[in-house]
Image (cartoon, rainbow, N blue to C red; front, top):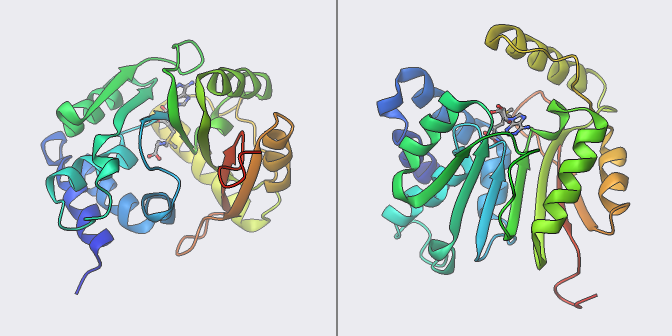
Length: 236
Ligand SMILES: C[S@@+](CC[C@H](N)C(=O)[O-])C[C@H]1O[C@@H](n2cnc3c(N)ncnc32)[C@H](O)[C@@H]1O
């Protein structure tokens, strides 16, 4: 018997069928095999308001929202989340169009570079496996833009590799280089940081950060960082 999340992930991945077997099976494999989607979906962080996914790729995280709206029996307590406004920003135009087609009226996908697009005011910002794809100063500039767009009680959820994770990190680097080669872009400007480095970078911008390993079931040395301006329980 599959869990509600597995059923949701399968239903979300069906949304990519019209984009072809590769997009569909990629979505299914990632949603079921990469722990970040389940952790963020089932975590307490996204409740309401606007969700902006920077570097959304095919829009996998947003596809869970779309699927849940059409299968409300799976997560009946997520009613407020049904009202979330969903926005993705993706620099590769053909991938942005796959995302838009899969998400339909549930989301708006902006085809453009997150570094130059105006980020809409939002409650939640997602940055999964995207920051390392730019150099350190662009990471800095993007974070400042993200902070300017974030509501006071907002949250930034970042998933990144931990450069101190030994062979698990080397696998991430290898996979990134192989993907860049296959897709025809350069990985030379990629900039990774250690888990402690990401944490102190976020804290250095006045954010309160929770972090946890985020690679269960995969060999990759990834971490999840949940960063807020304020602790919502104390308001400080
Ligand atoms: C490793 S993929 C992750 C995709 C998505 N976040 C997910 O979890 O499935 C990183 C994505 O970020 C996109 N990307 C990289 N730099 C970007 C930028 N400056 N602006 C917008 N998208 C960007 C890439 O094209 C790619 O689709």
